[in-house]
Image (cartoon, rainbow, N blue to C red):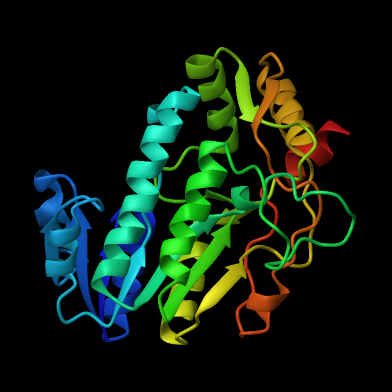
Length: 286
């Protein structure tokens, strides 16, 4: 199998290595020419393009059996809602539209933010739960990107929570410190949503599982047997332990307010290997 990976960050590079070790061929992409030689260590070919460059994406995808879209917005380009509208649309929707123009089999790393707060009710949130928060950039443009992908015969959107554990990635205490440094002690999330998080390795392996099993459709991917502590419980505990002022929650990005079910994905044969990374800090604070 030959696979084009749009977005060669931590996930894209690790996925490329995983695919090549199993005998598959990989075309990687980067927006930075200086990174080409480094990426050739993990990809058979490397193309310099952005996801919005449809003609270049089509050319790079020639002969490929599938495209994996692992692009993600850069948090430093999303300090205001106006910046988020521009950046999320450019990165997410245009990349998926280009992929859809190039191939029928597309695998997109989406987000739980599509659910907004999950709406009313107490039942677990599933892939059938209506999306909401259609105006907030994260939710709006992840949904629009999914629609580009799921319109294709082999389109597959994997909805993930916040990722952690990638090489060089910020720890949760470092993220809290960044909120103080760049966002004046504020966080765009709400206080009461469970802080779902998924380890980098589970992201890579779940994409590999979906790709090699030729899954299509929409899937939640998270620890199906656990409901994590809330944003406020986790961030308050981190701030107290790190000697920082507690964050102000401004609730611009609505997050699901209850359990999220990944049973549909578990039924395909994959289960998340890493448990809640923030449980220990909350337990210590009790």
